Length: 228
Image (cartoon, rainbow, N blue to C red; front, side, top):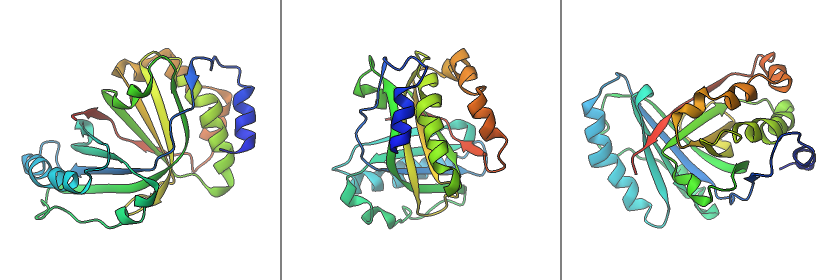
């Protein structure tokens, strides 16, 4: 994290005593497969009987979690990596045969750049019931300012909500199809966090509005409910 960002965090007006930034620094492999229709039994059977077992066979020394993403008719898989695994995981193969039901596949490596979690939750925050990934495409000229805002204002304000347990942030390395540059993984214990006054406040600050005026400030998201 940049020195300027650390200085801004230390001067933040928000109540940050209840959060910690000690989250580790491992990279992740993010994998999201979506179907072309809201209900695809073909995709469900293939994912659980072929695709997921293949991942498990190759990931015995890693921690992984996977989630159902019903609003996007698909599944999310997040694998914690060791640093020396980055290049090895750039090779990708579908479990054969891949179904025609697959409409979109997002697969990328994320290099840890920051984040925070509620102090009282502890490391178990990573096992939250819901994961809420948000993707941004940030121009290089805006990257430092974007990181400062997200780290020193946006995340601390979200973590004021008791259901918002943690946020981990990553710089994206493209593998298959990933047009974004940054990813934030938010971990929630209850979906009421997405309707909370804390989230509303975090999305309506003058600093946030400054970004909203920029044509590049567009983002996409997924929402996953943990299966295992």
